[in-house]
Amino acid sequence: MPPDAKGEYDPLYSWRMHVLQSGRERIAVFMNDASRYCVVIAGIRARHWQCIPELFIEHLRQVMLADGIDHGAISAYFAAAGEMAYFLNHDRQMTSWLNKTCEAVWWGFERFSSALDVSLFVCHFLAGSNSEKTYWVPSDRFKELILPKDNERKKVQIFGVIWDGHTIPRTN
Image 1: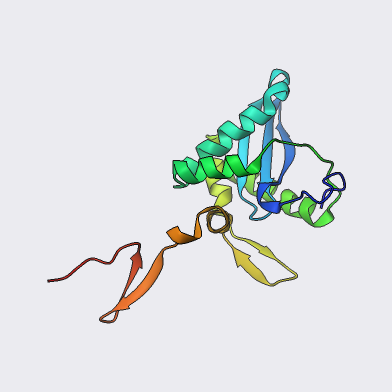
Image 2: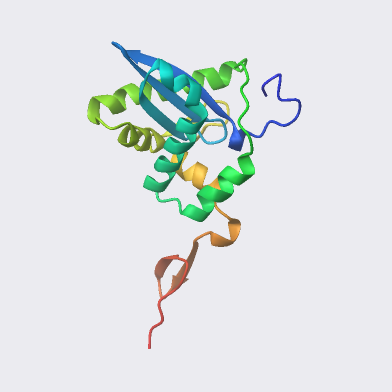
């Protein structure tokens, strides 16, 4: 937990940032604490640092839309997040995860030229925890955390076939 948060820390709304540099180009990498969901902003210049919160929100919205998250869930997430606050990072585990995310960003830029494509690539990159021995896809975990529980898709078995969706087709 960030030492300056004073009990207000919620990993779902907490993002870590690291800046990579390739030649003269700076790349901002944001990682969500709860899911390791990733947002990449390429081409950061000195004038952009004044408006980094707006750039982050804009790029997060683009990544969420491209990842198939609907407008209502996105609006609800931003409404619940509140105002942006900055804290120093003192968590070694989170720093390690952010470093792994940055490695995946480099691999993404070897395959894609768009920061949006790299963000989606990293969001679907398998992540895990050594202590828990569990693995997940950051995109799936982020969606589980932000989507309303009444919209969960249910699997139903009918005549030996598993239907995965909100509604089951009717047969006559």
